[in-house]
Image 1 (cartoon, helix red, strand yellow):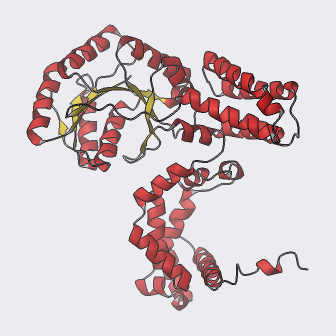
Image 2: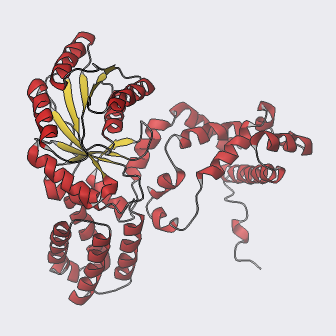
Image 3: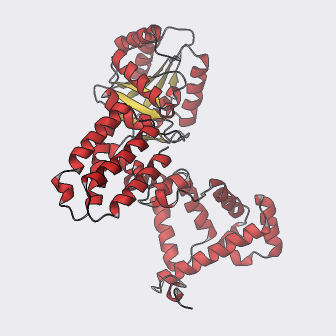
Amino acid sequence: MFDTLSSRFDAVFGRLRSKGRLSDADVDAALREVRLALLEADVNVAVVKSLLGRIRDRAVGADVAQSLTPGQQVIKIVHEELIATLGGSAVPLNKGAAPLTILIVGLQGSGKTTSAAKLAQHLKSTGRRPMLVAADLQRPAAIDQLETLGRRIDVPVYTERGGKPRKLVKNAMKEAARWGHDTVIVDTAGRLQIDKELMDELVDIRKEITPHEVLLVVDAMTGQDAVNVARGFSEATQVTGVVLSKLDGDARGGAAISVREVTGVPIKFAGVGEGPADFEPFHPERMASRILGMGDVLSLIEKAEQNFDQAQAESAVKKMKKGSFTLEDFLEQFQMVKRMGPLKDILAMLPGAGSALRDVDINDRDLARVEAIIRSMTREERQNPKVIGGSRKRRIALGSGTTPQDVNRLLKQFADAQQMMKAMAGGRGIPGMGRLGRR
């Protein structure tokens, strides 16, 4: 979502780093470009004014003037003030007497029902026993959608078709207590716009169950409209947190930067993909680093911990050191990397990789082709690729929907990688490095 904004920041910061000293005029010129970049990203005008005012007050001070690296100091100030705009630090869910009760609210089409299921999956992964409640009785398909999502993540869904929302949630709370669920997530009705009927229904539900959290789902792709919706809900209901949905989209991202400062309500979660697991707590400092192209190593580590089998990973490292790493081992590691999400998104979490790879076409379809080729091999062929002759290559290509040339290319790349692993394990360095620069 932030690719365009990140590239603009990268260009501005590149010019700042190149200067040995910074005058007030240099700072003003850089901030003008930052201002244009934020406005083009659809960040709220008042938020832009406040953010740049704080940055300028600090950037023209003695700390920057006396710094040995003034450009880096300004970048540090921008980073810190962007973190403050996004909320400062992560805000966890409120706690209280069990069951933890969460009301999910938002406009129709914002991703509300999907976010309810993703939140249930996230809380389930932390050891909680959630139950979903289908209280959106205005849109019949919403009940079916939530039931489908509930089956997918193995979380029960309480429904009463044709009932009244207030009575439904009352019965749902009794059912949760009966079956020992420590978390109840209520998906409420949405509208195409904020209206009195919608708010009255939410007030009735709130009175009945007194939720610990009222989470407003905001579509991050709708720009300033998302900010206006968040302001409207926070004024009409007691919203305790925001969930930014569709943060993986290709919109400009202004809503993500604006919503916290405009409403005063913390962003607690973000939807970062279409899968049930593509949902994470919102960390302002990590988001600011992503926006400024500094990467997000902590989130990358967390994704790896969630998706990698420790024993398998340790076994793979030992095989790499021995030079006995096979295509079978590669396929296992490949599956774990795939579960972390699109490769370009993963690489973007590495500091500096976002800008370096911005114009590189990293296509997940190419990775799928590699997987198809390996899966079309027999176990013997994966363990010992040297047995793969011409007829076997044709069979593998036919089975994977590729060409013998594709199979040849993969085998050569894997053989080169094996040679490199053996050389590194033997302390000889990377093959060919010693010849670099020789004619």
